[in-house]
Image (cartoon, rainbow, N blue to C red; front, side, top):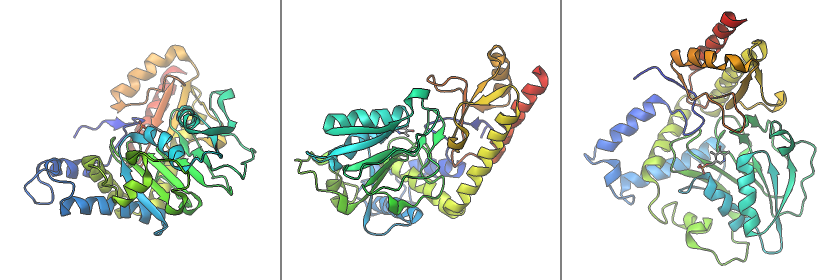
Length: 357
Ligand SMILES: *Cc1c(COP(=O)(O)O)cnc(C)c1O
């Protein structure tokens, strides 16, 4: 395996042992002498995979049977539509916090389904901070937030307390830190940022919140249909769910959320400290809202950008070019990224400064 330091924003880095085990399963799954890709999703060996994946989510979130876990296709973007379709009533309205491109897309879908209000937004400053001090209406059908803004590098450091059901897009920081899952009615996440490959989307929903819209439901968009089918109403994304299950197993085996939260904090501190110290870089977001997953920074001297690019490329760093909406650099330091890779990036930044200042 080459030593590429993979800072990709998504699909993102996965643990090497998970990649190895899942490639083995492509040839010989569970000593069946069959590939995982060519067996029935109803076989007992595969049902065990789905069951374990769903159980691991509940275990890591420390929730009981009032919640159900699904692994669906369609990405987090499908959830932008399924959430209002399943929770937004005819006469009611949905409340949203607009903290970036993904939140905006969620709002767009909700507006098609029904009444939708944006309670607060940070669009005025290119989503470089998290709005604060806003009031959450207590008559909304639900309040939707995005816990981590992958493109802008901001993160909610605490979650709003509210009387209405709280819904969260956790695509890019799911299981990166401790959250009080019981405060949420619904949490969803595309797997490909932090817990698996593209193709499966985790949805955890409180059962008693469902079935209240009065709407005639299309089967494939109805959480209750998927719950009844134990996440196998139709053929699930078998391989992505398998790789996700292995990644969650890896997380649990190494010490779970407490372990990963500590490690993620260490990685983020290391990188942000260097951004603040180094005269050739500056961070793009409000300090108190800095994401521990996606670290965005700009060069102070844009004329030197090409020189910095040469340096990180020769250090085998990949995937740190910033999103086009922000520019500069974005280093995504998801769960599977070892601290050693962050140290390599920090060393390159130091080296860059010593050569050009
Ligand atoms: C990537 C991302 C999405 C979109 O995910 P898809 O699986 O591509 O639909 C939504 N929300 C957040 C926060 C993301 O980072």
